[in-house]
Length: 460
Image (cartoon, rainbow, N blue to C red; front, side):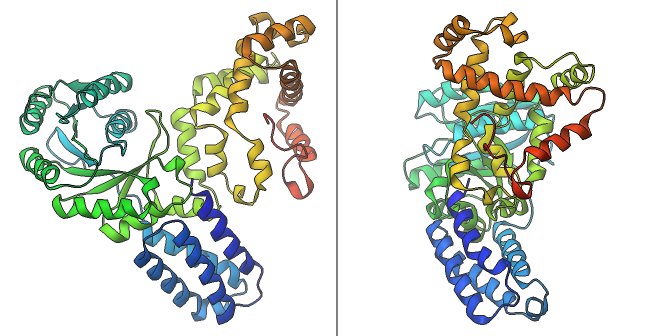
C-alpha cells in the first residue's frame, strides 16, 4: 500500500537524516523532492501546496535549527503534517441513535459499494457486537440485489428482500420498519451507483436520505482513482450531508493520492479502508498509523489488532503446549501456521505493518510473496497424515507423488522439507522454557547488524 509514495518520501528525507545542521538550501531541496513525490502520488495540487508550505515554515523554525538531530526533527514534522492532512485521529461511526441506527451507503458504480456494505456489516457484528440488517435499493441492477443477498449470507447478517419494480424510498422504509420490529441494532442501506455523477442519481439518493434520516451517510470511493476520488466525494457532499468516506481497493493503490486529498478537499473524514477482496478486509482508518506506514515506520498497533481478531488463539495455545511438552512440531502444525498467515493478509500485509521494512532492498521484498505460502500449503495438503507426522519417510517415489498432487516440482518438495527441518530444530529449543536459547540461535542466523538472514526470508 502506497509503495511509490513511501519510496519517494523516504529517499527525500533520508538525505537529511544524518545532517548535523539544516540550512534553507537543503530544506528547499528536500521540499522540492517531497512536492514531486506528492504530485506523482496524484495528491490534489492545493493539498500539495499547503503541505509543503506548512512543513517548510516549521522546518525553518527555531526548534529545528537548535535541535541536536535536525534531520530527525524534520521527519517528525513531515509525519505530523501527514497526520493533520488526513484528519488527526480516527473518527468512529456514530451509532448513538434509537435502534436501528441507519447507515446510508453512496458511491459510483464499480467503487466496491455493495462489497463494502457486507464488509461493514461483518465488522459491526464481530467488532462492535451489533445485530445488523442490510437492504439493497439498487432497483436498476438485479445482480446487485442478488449479490448483496449472497454476501449477507456469507457474513452472517439478515438481508431484507427487495425487487427491481419497487421504489427505493418504499424499500428503505419497509426495511426500516422490519428492522425496528426485530430489534436490529444497525440497518445498512445500499444505493444505486452510476458511471458518473448525474442529476437523476443525486435527486434519488437525496429523496432516500430524507425518507430514512440516516445517522451516517458514507461515500464509498475507489482509492486508485487518486485525486478524482476527492473531487467525486465533494460532488456528492454538495448534494448529500456526508458524514464520512470508505476508501476501497487501498491494497492495490501504490500512490496514496486519495487518502491524502479527501479530508482536505471535502472536510469529511475517511472512516474505513478496504484492503482486499475478502469480507474481513476492512479496517478503521487511523491517520497517525497511516502516516507511519507512508514514512516506512510500520504500524504495529494495527498488526496487534489484526492478530487478536484473526488468529485462532485456541490453536495457537494448543501448539504452544505441544511444543513446551516436547511432543514435536510436525508438518500439520507448519501448515496451520501458514494458513494463519494468509488469514492476516499474507506476507505482503505483514511487511506493510512492520517497522523498518521500508529499508529492505526491493530484490528481498520480491522474494517474499504469498504464492510461496499457498504453494507450501498445497504441498503439505498433498501428503498423507503419516507423511505430515513423520516427514523422514518422504523419499523418491513419495516426493514424485506429492509434487504431482500439488502441481509442483520435486525440488520444491526438497526445499520445503529443508525449511521444515530448520524450523523443527528451532522448535525443539523451545522445549522446557528454552526460549532464550532459541533467541540466541536466531541472533546467530541474522545478518550483520541484526539484519535479514543471509538467505533472505524463509518461504521464499
